[in-house]
Amino acid sequence: MRHEQLAELLALFALGIPEVEGLDYVRAHLAKGCASCELELREMDDILRELALTPEPLEAPEQVRSRLLARIPGVAGKREAGVR
Ligand SMILES: [Zn+2]
Image 1 (spheres, rainbow, N blue to C red):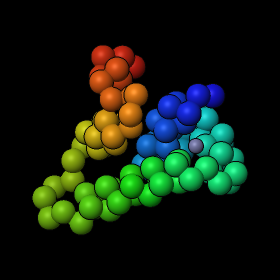
Image 2: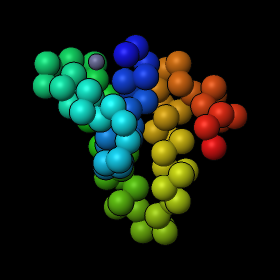
Image 3: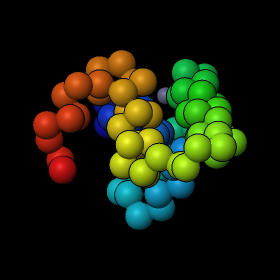
């Protein structure tokens, strides 16, 4: 699996979406101690926490998801048209 794909999975991992294929791989990868993925995950966690703390109504999960994905180099943009 390419590292960019992994970063994408990290976003889903951060969102706590359990039924996505490949999360086991992400977990294993993190367990191996990949510093950049760990940092990425931490930043995503921060974003999610910020969102949770905002007094405004929480954004739709889909928006949160694309915002997270937009932070990932190489994923931003090309994801918009596809998948959904
Ligand atoms: Zn990594």
